[in-house]
Image (cartoon, rainbow, N blue to C red):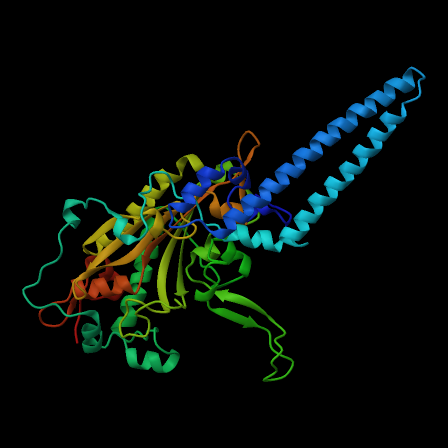
Length: 461
């Protein structure tokens, strides 16, 4: 591995500009399948067409200039004097070349600004192109529920009326919702006693499973990242309004309105730091595939999201998650995606939870994804499925933005594909577990894989 010198490159910040230029109708159709074509795409196409025409005109004039230059050389060799018309043609073409060069420069500066920031901003706002086998649709109603394995295809049944997780948590004192709100406001949780132990046990179980049985390497990343890391995974600029910013540095005096520091961001998922571990590096082909797993708390403002502020654990501003990241060769990436989904499914199988796998349609996928499977676990007390894992192949969308490459054995630099998946997310896993394994006497039966961590097979009131 070697690090690359940092440089400004539009190709590192967007969809492949060559693809946009050479196959605009294909790119437009793929973007449209996500719901709409961003206005930025038409502006980028217009810029590309203007530059293409100016460049073509410039090439023609330069070719004619070279032809006239050759004529001058021949006349000099023959000891002849160039005609006035030939000299005038040479002067005219030279002026035209200068004019075209200035137009290209002025058009570029006018359109994108001297720093290139405007074009960069437009390119960063273009989402990834959906894979061709992703079903088309505008929202979740067009998602495809895949056939369940027989042993996981039946919902649990009870000989009593199951309670929801709020009632269970309050009765067993697993979560103190009221004091969490007092501390941090709505959308935050305070796990207590057996609730805190169960949350910790789940995190440890997930990490041990993925590292010892699924071949991932555990990392413990920072929980605060820089702006470029959020751009690298596709969180920014689209989700600026959902990020928690952290001010580093202070004003000159307490209460000074002029801020002298800068911003970092609390991670919305461990994907943000872990996928960026090898940003601006050239890996060797022998290093691939790279498989990381990491625990982190996740912070999401979820601006405008319905349900935030209500009691419960379904939608919160801070939750725990174990994230899976793969960096792989392009030809293997979709096989690796299927394996990642199986890794996340294994969690629910071992915990005895009913679930289903859903292939998301084009309009319901994440910004950076080319193909996504969601795994939804059944929560009896809610009477509905809850998403606990989302496994995505982002292809080269993120590696391009991060300027991450790998060198093949033949010496060619290529873009790896990056995959991410929840392996899995809490607090919804917590909800499904306590609702599924609740007993008639009010206790919770602990699945066998968690018992070594909790040193008990049942949580009582």
